Length: 197
Image 1 (spheres, helix red, strand yellow):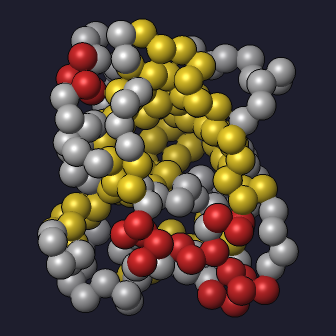
Image 2 (cartoon, helix red, strand yellow):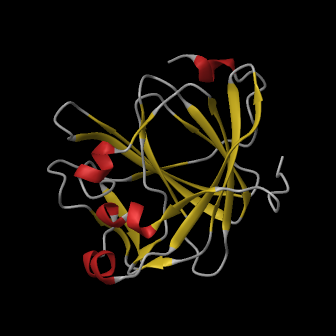
């Protein structure tokens, strides 16, 4: 869809909102507050399915590539993302009641690719480029709530994407090996499954 966002006011995620989830603790502690990414929510809505767009400019957070804060959905709600411009890595993880990770995988996606966030998986979107901005769109049930608390408590996801590639987050006791999955090439015709929470 790729809306014209030039006259719209986004929700802005700042470094101050993200310090507790960054890999590079020196950077997190000593850097001044800056804008990290821009969320344009509710650009369209049809039958309680909401369409948003997000712009994640190319930035380095010390040794780590810029990313979203990461969240779980409260309930079984799924979500669909597509890359409108640039490239993205979507990091998905599923935890048990002890915050041990039962499953973790990454999906690398290019312009036109789609990625489905499964039920009960937390997710982080990463811009793996040092010079090209990332623009994504997502469809979700307008009534779902985001839970950021696990990412805040554990200092981010169970893996960080850094200049040294993937680095395990040592705050997690049990972390499976990271596997790679492929994106899908088209948007499902019927999005009503997104309302099943």
